[in-house]
Length: 211
Image (cartoon, rainbow, N blue to C red; front, side, top):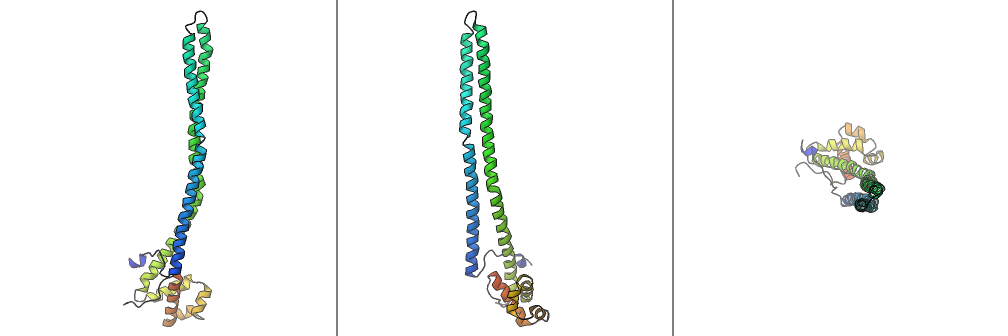
């Protein structure tokens, strides 16, 4: 039973195996390209953080200098207290500007990460799920066919797979009434169907169970 649950990733026929490898490489290239593009978009958006950080630093420096100036002017006789109040307010405004610059820089970083992720997400998921659907589906069918090919009576089950999976045109190449002939147990038809299905999967022709 475990042999029937095995998988076979690549066909035995060279032409189909080459196509499968090419599709794998194409999927890797597609995913890599979109991941790179997502990272690039992230970097471009996040690059605006530098300007916001400059605002944050400038606001902090201005607030510090104003507070220092207010401290010096506060010692001026008669007008010291009156002069310090508006300077302190200006320093508070500069501190607010500093905090706003820091918040803007953080938001730009988060926005860049979100946009970069969303740019890459859909194309990558489509490629990955498409690859999984096609390649794993093939691997399971080919693995099952490989196991059945080596078992007594396996040709009959392979013929059934052929009847359920091959196109009508392909079945017509086997015989005029392949379904009826399979039901009647016609060995020649069963073998032809099994080999046609193996050929469809890119596998070797039907082998005897003792080979």
